[in-house]
Length: 194
Image (cartoon, rainbow, N blue to C red; front, top):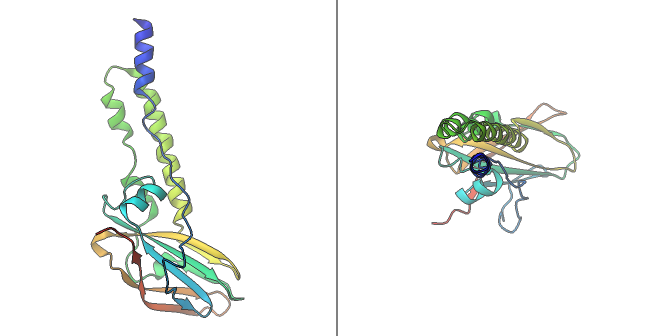
């Protein structure tokens, strides 16, 4: 009986996990018309459900958020600063998006009822998965960062689906002059299947 309980406990644990891939570079052949600000090439892609599962490990679109990947290739000798607040559509805080797709620790523990050991083990794994998810989302979607000369940077922004529009304005701050450089009517290319 004791061995049966331990075997059952081991079989029921280990379901909560988080695994996602690094953001890929936007292929210049897919994004044929990279907009440019004085030598700063910018690519943009709206994620599909498949992209969400690959790069975020969760379908955040189903939770009401549209992820948009933006890449910057700075071929100038100038330093620029990116801020998600300088995009004309509202961006959601990364932590809010991460929390919307957390694995429910309490729900998992309650689901085990009287099986205390599997509940504890799975609860701990669920908390670790949620922590990894938050860390990964923050690494992939910083709210602001510096784009040094000669660098290539990529980021994500999350837009509430109710406010998403595939064309928007994007501004970068030129660090030396303090002037904003803006691309108006910037297109977020989507490779979504019809």
